[in-house]
Image (cartoon, rainbow, N blue to C red; front, side, top):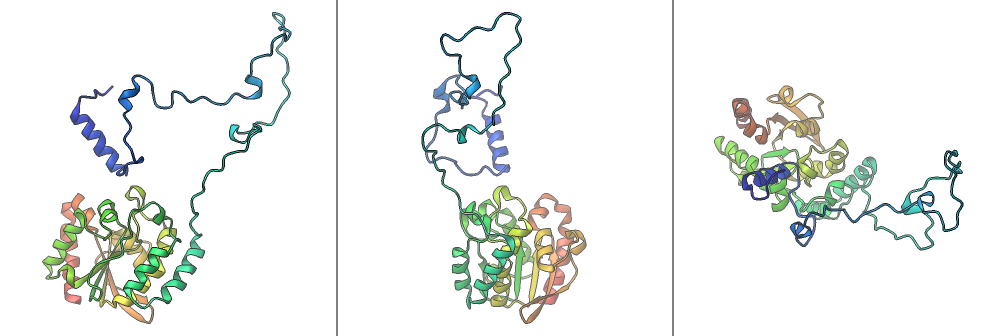
Length: 298
């Protein structure tokens, strides 16, 4: 067993928990587990006794030695929580259930069409409950950069740093993205940066198609309001969603396509995600080729 005083192993365990998505405290107050001594968590819990587990009442006849055990009548097995205990069963509060994919998209499209500004779109997103990611995220991550820009960058989803800051691409991947843009002469004030979903998925997992579909009408309306000359999808999930393709990012990147948004046709290209480039520095040469194409298109 790991020693409590082994600081390096404890820090390694915390890093592992953080990598698995456990980045926030569950309770509001700290628990001193060491004060419990050798008693394990949950040691005081025991299952409620069922009818046939209750001890025989006094005076019951003992079964003779060697006799066959009595045949018990078959009874319907029910969960202890549903057993008839003679008292009212406690009602557990139920979390709000997200809308179905088609219902959420229909509602989102109706709301998005009525919005005439980015401020109004952000307010509509704050009131929108059709995406289940909202219930587990800390903050809405709408966009960062310029409200109007020739270049609009669309990523996959907010991460931990973005969830805390309420803006997309502010962590290590975002810092690398800023350097990539600076390499072709662009700053944050000259681009518009967002994601295909506006809330962080638990554990930084990939957004599901249903979650992306619920946010899609807002993203389309956002593109209409920003009115970019070029769209850049960053990463595989964003490329598939923006370009409407099923291929992987290595097949999609570096190729120009036309995307129909409202009554406009916008040229779009996919490139590698900065997070992937941090893990695979050798792929930066591919991203540089894509950046040069983007620069020439602008």
